[in-house]
Length: 132
Image: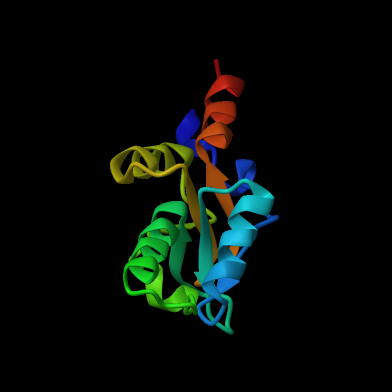
């Protein structure tokens, strides 16, 4: 029965996103402001090209501090370039499996290759709860 439930049924379409050109310190401000552990990075066509996480930012800050650099660079310099996404029509079991396999809190949702939302562990648990 859960296989008939799709990502679209439980995803959030309100997604905080950044571009690769975003300043690193602006990205840190965004993570802190919205209390997020990671944010998808999109290109001009709204296609997911990466993600920047708290860990990526910490590594960048440590590197910059070590080299005594004042400028932080851009998100594109420090983001993870390989990010798992799922199509909006993916069933919730497959979404859950991917979240567990990748050890992530949330997954960007795409439609026709463009970012349309995200789904997180809590969303998946709500889907499971609604069928118990």
